[in-house]
Length: 134
Image (cartoon, rainbow, N blue to C red; front, side):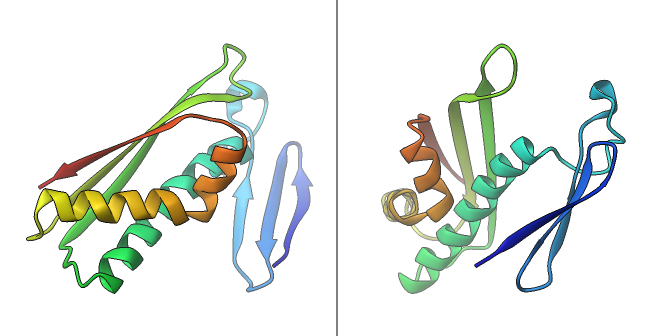
């Protein structure tokens, strides 16, 4: 696996992976950027939300748990300077005919195997997960 970041102008870079995907990262205009994309810091939180939804859907599928819709929101608290996460709350909103206990098991397994989540765990950033069944 590989990622390459190529600076474009000012504070803007294009980050690519070895499968040909690309993301623009930039600073907001309030920090003299062009606001052409998320900051790398924001992208890390977006990666956590994306990982949770992917792994939740994967675990549900392998467990034969039907899901009709799934939305994951990661809300982060940061240090006063906005440079570090201090706490994250991840809310998983799922519509499913499965009972809540089954969905909680899927969520627990998601927490245990989410690779991006493990990076945040290793950094000792608390992440509280909430399940909302619709």
